[in-house]
Image (cartoon, rainbow, N blue to C red; front, side, top):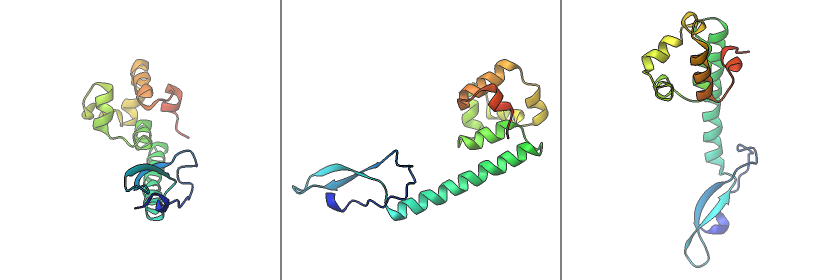
Length: 132
């Protein structure tokens, strides 16, 4: 694709903060980096993906509020992680993380463990334990 034909279909999906780098041919036939704010098919796919992610986060929030799972479930979804990855950050198995998804177990976790979880999600302990 020629440099002057790189798509610039701005739907503000990146909130105007970012541009994607594409490679295109300049007038000499050499590949150069060109910034693009988006391409319609790419923007549609990204929008759909974010809708699915936001639905999962909302579902996790509702499950936390209903007492089915601990707040940990919400933060795992919100950060697009899974139990295995969180376990790796925490230094233990995914089975231990799954155990902490139980609201009663989670409510009895020591403060230092809650602090470590909060650090993984880059939030405060107060944010970790209270979902609104």
